[in-house]
Amino acid sequence: MSFESAFANPSPVEDPRCGAMGWSFGMGPIPIAYPRVVDLSPGGDLAYISSRLAGAMASEAELSGVFLVRPESLIPQGPVVTWFSEAAFDYEGWRRIGAWLVIVGEMSAKPQGIHLVLSAYLTEEGQILRVKSSEGVVPVNQVETFGRNYVKSLLLCVTGLHDFEHTRIAFARRAAPGKPKKIYVVEIGKEEVVQVSPGETLAILPSWAPGGKVAWTDYRSGNPDLWIDGELFSNFQGQNSGAAFSPDGKTVALTVAPEGNPNIWLLDAKTSEEVARLTDTERTVDTNPTWSPDGKQIAFVSDRNGKPQIYVMNSDGSNQRLLPLPGTYNTSPDWSPDGGKIAYQSRGDKAYFSIWVYDVSTGEASPITKGPWNDESPSWSPDGRKLVFTSTRDKKQRLYLMNRDGSGVRPLFKGKSSDKSEDFTPAWERFW
Image 1 (cartoon, rainbow, N blue to C red):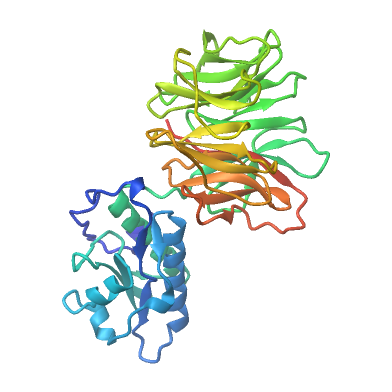
Image 2: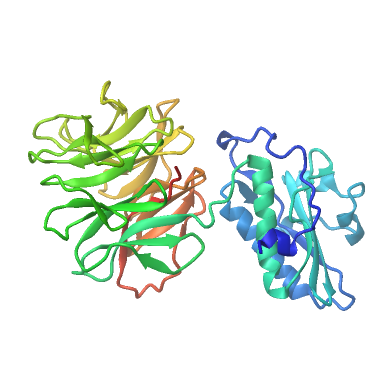
């Protein structure tokens, strides 16, 4: 039974404005109020639960990377009755604190659980935004889940973007110094990781293949071969790494080096047969391909000018050109799902790596992380709202999440600082 059928109003109403609000990534974060949940029980017995619900909705809103939650201290004061009337609601008071949207909840006890009614007020329009999953009788242990799902409904209504929960991240992990790296997968919102590369041999550089499969470079044969979900895919002598599957799932761009010189080839995604050699340079390294979402271009890394830099070429290998990026060491590009940005890592003057973003339309590049540590290997979420990356800010190399503008940095795992493991080269799941 789905969450919605179990807890939501059996006849939910979807606002006709949903999906047509003109939102885009260029608008920046949308300011919303810290949620207010009122305990309507006679003795105030649900005060603790109402506070937890408000906090859960605020946390989900911040996690979205779209909503910016205003401080709780800014909640306007006034009679409680005005919170539940569309006509009497203090729209002007909320506009003054800079809130475009206000989430209000009312809570009361029922024999079957907690009766919840959630509402979202648009301060500029002076109206309620009606979305699904806004009312229901919920078991006590599901109250916070109900609130988080309500925020997700608001997000989908305002932006048209589904949440990225239940998507997965593949990464390489070294359990301790001296141990070989292995490939793992974790689902967003969970702590449990699943090892997908078998055995104890070195496995590196995971990526996603059509059908939810994981590809990686594996040394079990003594040669760096490409494997996909446990099956050998490509074993050219010398190198098979950095697999990037095309948006239509028909081909894969891969770094191979059968003659000892790493270049990017295009292989058939089903047969692994050679389709084309996209680069053909001598005594240089071409690697790290990433596709534009329309499948027309590929960004990649080359040291053909003496230092690793990011280039872009057409998907047939023509028109190879250097991106005008600052710095002399730029690697690990990842093209955003909306096609507008390329995230990459750059090493500055103090030899620390930071995450930068290149704007495809303007040609401008800007850093979104900075500090006396290394931030590396950015990978976009499927909806383009988030990035996963590695950082040594905790002394060990670990995985972190952040919003697309660099705000909201938080560790992916809540692991103890004494943990000896380190994580590398994350790849957020993509869909075909």
